[in-house]
Length: 225
Image (cartoon, rainbow, N blue to C red; front, side):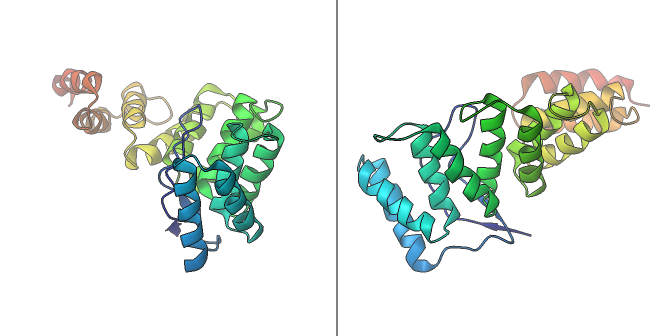
């Protein structure tokens, strides 16, 4: 079971890391009301340019084992928002949040290892973090894990495992995953060919705004048995 943490509208990191909606694993402790209020004030301070005050608040809350604060502090280090900020400290704080069950931080760890932005690039370790976040419900991580299996990049090449994660991401509303899943069913890549399911997922992707999927859905209509 997942618990939703609060909203923290900090900035986004390169590589499609959104800091708008967070998931926490059931094992992660939710902040107390006092910690939550302090966290929200720190985010407001950050948004209004009071970076030193925001940093100090995040540091204090991170020492209280509030994972969102550790994560946000790591983002500030990564973005170089104060003197002495460093990629090494960014990784340290984001990893702390990830190990405390903060799913967005787990996805971020995957990105850090994939890009090499905060240390040596390691696709195998990146994939392990993506799978951890994917299993906890991160749709972005499900897409990343599926892609690793599909390309054999950081994981053994496995169309079946790629399809498994793309299916989860598709059910979670990712339009790209919906199209990819449809294509895999159409081609029989990762599972037995199934034009009915291919058309179903193309249609879902089309309804969610993918014009190419709409064309594919129409093409499959006369080919269905």
